[in-house]
Image (cartoon, rainbow, N blue to C red; front, top):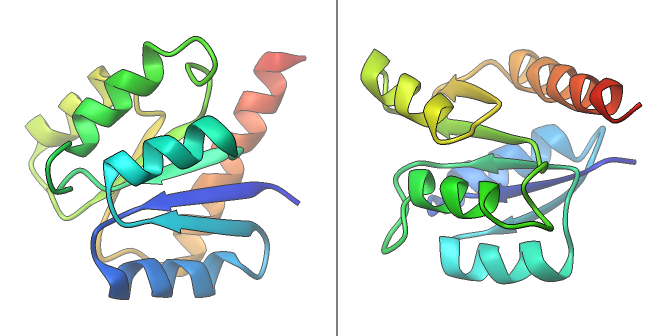
Length: 126
């Protein structure tokens, strides 16, 4: 079973996402980038759902940090945010996100996009 990590400061969102994703994936979560980084170092998931609007260290910065880390640089990252502007989406993709999903989202779309990114990453490794 693939392990998905969620880093989002909104508890309601984390709980909703856990409920949706736990039917198909093992789910771990963190409410901020600092704690999330520690978990990533110790317990690397198969994919990260990353909010952009995080306290202290934002999602863009954390994504760049992941891409610059030898151990984590190939970790698939999907930005999940309320930021609807094209500039924000482009910035997310330019810092290394594999996909960008807008909140609110359809549960089936979220699962489908996660599966697509995981499948693409598996194919690249083979």
